Length: 56
Image (cartoon, rainbow, N blue to C red; front, side, top):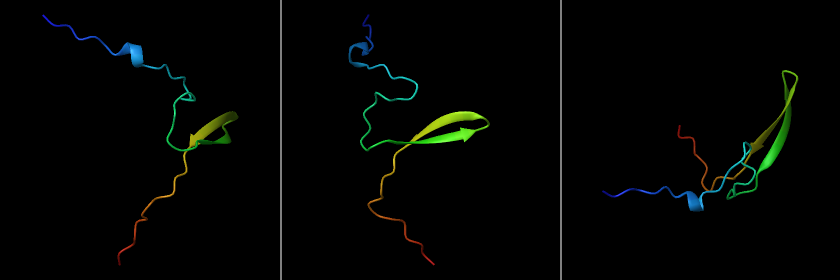
C-alpha cells in the first residue's frame, strides 16, 4: 500500500488580504466607505496587449 504525502513543506500561509502573495503586477488599493464601513479594495490595473476590436 502506497500513501501520498501532502506538499505541506512548500506551502506558505496567506492572510485574509493576501498581502504576502507575490502578484505578477503592482497591486493598488482603493479605500471605500460603504454602509458606514471603511473597506479597502485591492486591484491590478494591467493594460491589454491587444484590445478587443468592435466589428460592425
